[in-house]
Amino acid sequence: MITICEVGPRDGLQNEKDVLPPETRAELVNRLAAAGLPVVEAVSFVSAERVPQMAGAEELVERIERRDGTVYAGLALNEKGYDRFREAGLDEVRFALAATESFSMRNANSSVEDAATAAEEVVARAREDGVRSTVTISVSFGCPFEGAVDPGKVVELAKRLSAADDVVLADTIGVATPGQVKNLIEDSGASGFHGHNTRNTGFANAYAAVEAGATTLDSSIGGLGGCPFAPKATGNIATEDLVYLLEGDGIETGVDLDALIAISEWLETVLGRPLEGQLYRAGRFPTE
Image 1 (cartoon, rainbow, N blue to C red):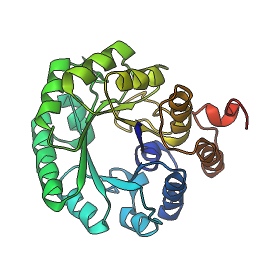
Image 2: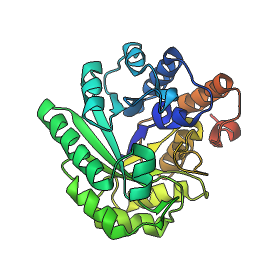
Image 3: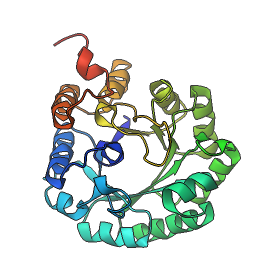
Image 4: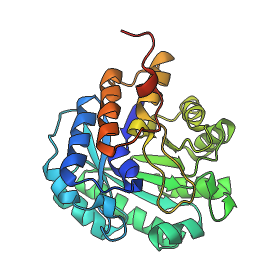
């Protein structure tokens, strides 16, 4: 069984030009949870001035219709964000830090060392509070400002932050290849992979991560996403396409594929444009 973490409501929508109101984003969260996704990254507790698409996090959380068996996660990048996370009462805190100095300064206005220290503090507080934690190491395979990333640096960060319940390696700008993903997952001991399909390798990379022992995969409904701080980065791998791939190969996800397709169809009308995902347009096979 592979655990899919749906990041569309947060990582997906934060890259959209249009800012959806909290009630619409909450409806998306509720639809995704109803489709059987075990983890939904619902909100980001960051500055609304810096990321206006994530404004109204607390209002969104209040509108969530909680379902048993669904873990509702929120992103926090510092202890202030963690305080907001705890007050909101979500189930899992997710912390992201970069593997390179340039990206860390652009994304979080922080050095890698300071970001790693902040991650350790958030993970420690989560453990004390009995809350799950996930740390994502962004630009693990390549940085838009520094180029190729030293795998040893990523391994060092992953080992340092292994107190988290999950450590996820992110191919933020979609430059990795399957062999690179397999090797780095194995060397770092990371339990998860977050892929972007910028160069059409995202799904092959996700499959390579599973073969290397990863148990968690991030994906975004309809292939929404990118990164506002990463030039030319395009969307995450599409959740419905990923489920089709895994289930077709006998790897269970526990997710309702037809429900995912319906969500992408609905979201296309909400955003007023075609989404990047392919399955919701092509249809499942065989048709049932």
